[in-house]
Image (tube, rainbow, N blue to C red; front, side, top):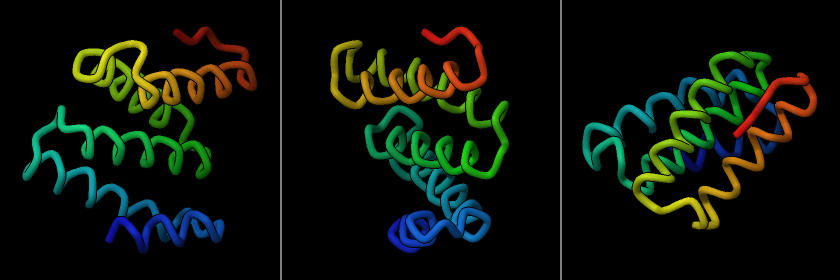
Length: 100
């Protein structure tokens, strides 16, 4: 399911990717737990898809939650944490908001 969602997203078919990405996040939270690195990857990917769909507030909220959990679980210097922070900063630069 995650691979199909990623394929849709890479083709710019964000509306088709979004419900699949939501399902992946929900399934990973249920099976792996909300702090598992794979769950956090899926949250990050869903946030990006929401940004692509123009759901900017939802995207920002989810990315901030992902960053908070990645900092707790992986540490502030982990490449995945740094990547999420960078992503949020890029969004903030475009929307002129403050990012971590």
